[in-house]
Amino acid sequence: MKNGEKTMAQKKRVITGLALFCAVFVALLLIATFYDLEISRLLTNGILAPGEYDTNNTFGAFFEIIGDSPVEIMLAFSIDIIFVYALRFCEKAKRAVLMAVSGAFSVAPGYVFCLIVFNRLKPHILYGSDAQLTSGAFLHLTYLFFGVLFAVLGILAVNNFSDASIRALLKFAVATIVFAAVSTIAINLGFKDIFGRLRFRAMNVKPDDPAIGFATFSRWYELKGHSVSDELMMSVFGHTDANKSFPSGHTGAAGISYALIMLNSTLCPKKRSVRALFWFIPVVFTGLVAVSRIVVGAHFMSDVLMGGTFSFVLMMLSREIFIFKGENIKSLFSKNR
Image 1 (cartoon, rainbow, N blue to C red):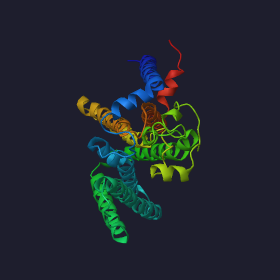
Image 2: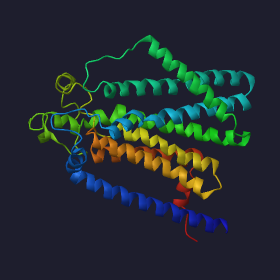
Image 3: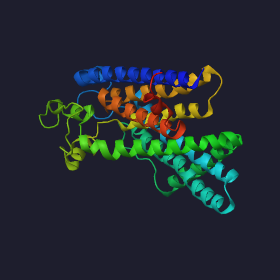
Image 4: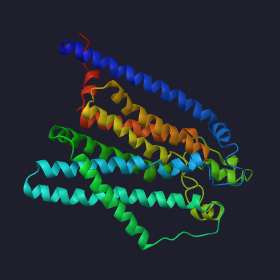
């Protein structure tokens, strides 16, 4: 196939992919826009009783605890790649600096993962109980131990890749770090505060209250900001994040698993079944996390749709910039011949 024909074929694939993505997204967004509240009532039925904010539903609890783990996993893998790259290819002075910095940062994802898992596990262990679990310096030392252990095991695993693979994976590592950082910061430190949307389970605490009940339900596109003060939220719900429904941080974090698609493009496995798996795993995992967040009343359909889609779009942009060097974008502007 000549270069011109290859470019046209690539252009057709890109246009088809964009059209399909837009059609599915718009269809789901329309459903969510008009039926958000009804979908949440249907999926929380029998799980979240009127007057409840929290639930100990197994499906919801499991994905609440591990749903945002792709952030730590993908960041750890990316930092380990940088460490091994520095070890193999950098000159002495640069190698020492990069290894020291990446080695120190490689401990953080494992530490944070243990910290988050334990803190999210506590409410479910103590659900309906007045008991207390031990916390303090010992626990943080334990988290640190596992952080170091995960870092060492990760570096040893990455070190098994060939020199050619490590060189290629460096682009993946940089793209993933940028992707994860932008997605996490934008969703959790930007959009949530701007939209200030009350969670379904927050309105469920006093469903008939005109000030905080279902009468205050808002569509995803309405900007509420901090319409409910932290003091009121703490006194009524026992939480200060009751108005941080949109978009879903858990689903956005689960969407960091889409970095597997970038990994697929970087390593280019020969087996079609393996390539399909790199797409199947993140799509299914993100979908399960999304459903679990609706089931426990933490989010509406539009919240999880936007959270997951935002991460997916960011991943595709990162892949295009760092892995493909803009080839697909360039093909869109190529002239038919």
